[in-house]
Image (cartoon, rainbow, N blue to C red; front, top):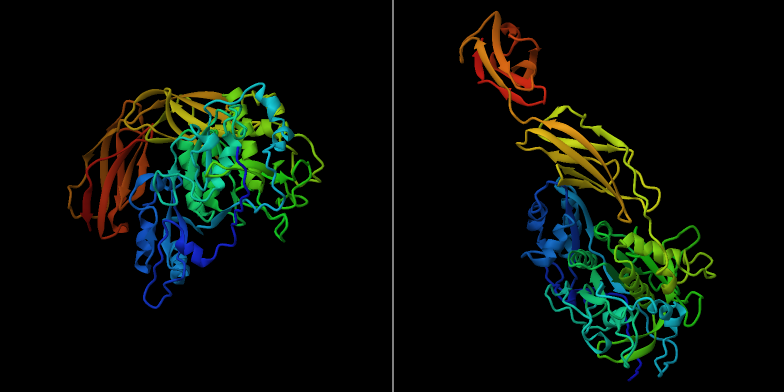
Length: 592
């Protein structure tokens, strides 16, 4: 077993570094400085809008698509109704203004850069490889129950090298920096993170990670400098979820909030995936207790770091200020890990290395409790955390892997009391909006409401008040609508409503009226007949697009004073049946 010192330096990202990042070109217009780094933007389109409209709006200003050409990058952003554009710095303000005035655009934000949350070692190296952090979080006691299974844990980082204790543990992933399938580690940070999660234990060599049999899915979102764009991180989250990851580890952070990252995390949460993130290493700076992202996003399990062999906060770790609770729990932040060359190091520092200790423990928990959702995993990890004297810097305390395996999840189903629309037994047509009532859950919280018609999925909604569209198409007859409400722990409740769907148009015919193109004067009389199997609700006289009068009794008779109408008149008779279907007879054009 070989040990060596290592220094990973991730400094402030200069404009020059950004310009040399893999997959990013440097370009400029006439009169602009070629060396100036381009600006990347994330643009989200409104529901139903043309996704190509934003680029057309700003292409004349030199904006170009980063995700063009299809493939996983474009597909991942499309899942978030967003795309990534790049423009010269000199024109970025004009492009942002143009996009924000485009009615097809929901929002525009700068594609911020995130950085790996590790620090250079500042303590003497240990050469014996003793992992005191393993005992500190009671992993050996947890291994008595399980050493893991083929649970997929995604590592969104600089990539992962398939070496040493990770040989045979790493499956195929994706590289969003270069946009290809080569997710190998060109920096080292991601491999160290992965080794803490899944290094094969009890094999007589190397080190023991948290989950010996878990599968590592490498998703390269950080470049060889340890930096990466929000859009790439968001793509990585979507990719990991869609490829079956149950746990996502993000040992990266930045100061700015991103709606795109928030949407991507929500995407993972809705699929039952646990997202773990490092709290950041700002403990020795003026930003020591300022929120860091993605750790501070809703439903992300944010992990701070403790000092070596201690429950005390590591001085480098970001932490909660009074009144905040975004840092959820703590784990050792001075650890042993393996680098991309298969060399083992002690005294690696950073919240980057605390987060994967939690992710590895989550892999054990998912093995022991395979039905647990992301919420259930997070609940068990937080509820089992060992109280430490944090003074609030970490909300729940220290990771306790063994106790987490004993925590039960929420098994109480949510509640739905009824449906306010559509009315039971009534006739309906076209697209019907189903509105459930009394939806609530007092434990894990409501995740979504979903609509099924005769057992076939139709739509879902994740936000209260829930509105569920059902397009009845050409269906006719009785339909059983089932609204299923799911909570975040995977429990569900349902409510049925039976309706009659009628998409057959009524029949209507003018029986007496001036001929088409006639010249009319005085009182103009029109009569019509109408019929429908479900019954006629009313027949209407429409002049120039406006309802002039209506009749609900057959035979249907109408009259209007020509002198009170415009010189040219488009006259129509339409029937409306009791399901709301509408049918017009042929239009007649009159003049006076």
